[in-house]
Image (cartoon, rainbow, N blue to C red; front, side):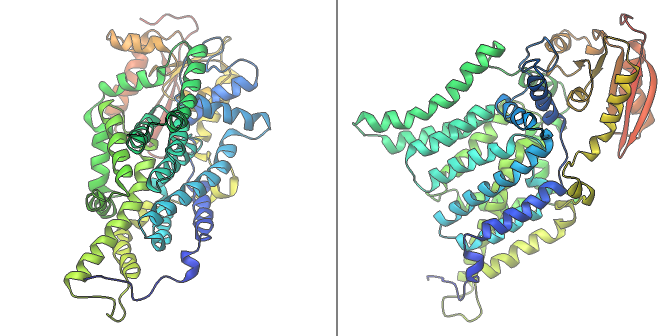
Length: 496
């Protein structure tokens, strides 16, 4: 039996203008939920030094490939050159980027003849802003524009070169762009198979010049194509407990999130299973597989910004999965086009709402102060204050060792030794030789945050290494969930 809808959404909700409404709401949440991440400030430090004439470096005089997004760093530098703080510059652009991503999701829905469900998908994305919004200042807003533009081109069967172009920009921006570039290349090959005219092949392959040019520029400047930050995170993650791994956190969030069973995520998994055979959405399924394989095979840590494409697709598949289940149940119960009062979109809304409501308090996080400030880095204020103290009290030349290199490096006027090795490769060499990097850090200050109120754990993780390296506690800064410890030792005192 063929099941059709008894009535549709109001025309306004099916109108393309709905994208602008959802984008505006998501933009509000962008500022309200924003928190400038440490990795964002690493890239911003590169940008600041470039604007100030020191070159695209983290520490003056050291060329280290310590950011995975140099292109984003150049973009942030352009904003700083105009006098805009990098986090405000990034967040304002994120509103536009979010609108483009939502438009692409609407195109994907239209390709499977379900465009009337866009307000539901968009609304779920806004409600799940704590998951779908990446940490403020990160390049993942623009990255998602490239990824979802490539997916829309593939799903809508546009010319292969269009998907390759967007995928090429994704690859130029972030290393994990190789996932979408590989999928776009595969489908381009399938589309052109048997084509004897060389012109379509050349046009389709031409966008590969984008990541190639980016790679040549990176190699010429940094002397390597492998970011030191990637090397460092792989080494640190390899020595971390399993709970730190990408795949473990992903599975945990699918099963349990915000203190409750994660029914929306489970519904999304069901949606992927139901639509896996759909020929239109097959490129999206292929991207999901390639993206997961990239991070799991690479042993990546479970950082939240790695999940943003997955979180957005989870909203899409949760709605599509709910719609498919509603249709199937209706068919089994004998509903058809003549059944009064029955509507697939309305019952899909009911199904998704039932899945989302228990999760709602944890999914949406609002901070009115951040919303009003236009600079939602309020949680990082303690690091600015610590940096100001260090700038006042340091013995020239000022040097510090820390794990929070972005937070402190951006505001500190001196050399920053990275315990994790993202911008100081000697840390990784020490770790691989079984030496704690703190023992090779020739620094006056040692700063470590601890996210535990367990005194024994704090003594072991913070005080122990500091005492062994000759540091004494200088001050302790409180923050929700823990403290930031500031240790100091006499200048030029070699570590034991």
